[in-house]
Length: 174
Length: 181
Image (cartoon, rainbow over all chains, first blue to last red; front, side, top):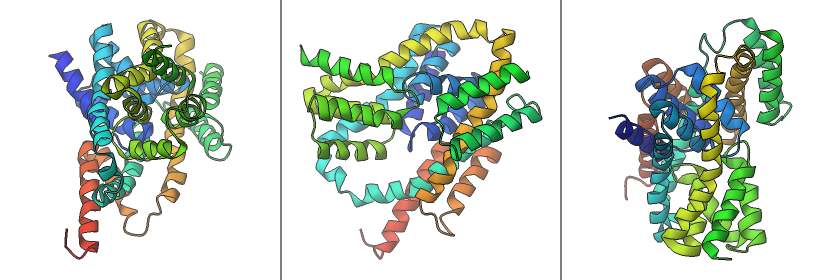
């Protein structure tokens, strides 16, 4: 039952995402590319690129795209997007209800302090897992990687500019 | 104008004009809901932001649910989240409809061959400042390293790693309090 699977998968992703879009990538990667093999690593990389260039959060963008690709239907796409947002609804509405207690809860703070260093590991894993032979076929890809890394880290360039520049380079080099 | 419509259009505007993920959305959300509509105060906004960041899920969706809830209860939160999600949903759906057939095009193949390594760099670059910002010491810096080994080499789901991290944080706090709850 593909729709049920899709729903459960994106519900899980929404429920366990801490630390923003990049941390979410390793979760989506593990579920969609490794476990279910709905798409391969290079198509997943393309989705991240498209997400970065279009408006909206990565989580919504990838749910919409993967939902459509996996089922071939707009319904599947809407279902995955709904599923990734549903845990937020349940949790935020609950928190809004218990607002004061949550704000000063030391146990919540302690749990989050433990998650913080894990998030760094998740983002690093996402990057490492995307270093595949399809994404890095030759030395030219490593030159592009180094350039994009330098532009982002030292040059503080925004992701869209970096992606456009890399696309132009790709067009010239390949 | 009906307040539901107002909420919807405000968040749809935020959803349509922020490229680059949730964190890029924050200043725009603040302009709309604090400065322009005065739906929440500066302080409330900071509280909402802090809680949204510590709750699981998509940051922008979390904040819109919070603000929508404050304004119009559960219905308001649905309208706000819908506003945030709908623009990207429509745009990505259009792309998904056509991208499959474009992917085999020679020009698209060469453009994306250049883009893919750059995407990996985009994900890797913030790691340095993130590690500095987290103030890792000799022991806690083992946590990200072990997480990477488990995820990359043993295919362990990141979900288990997050649960383990949370438990570790709770255990550490429990010990620091001398074992009393």
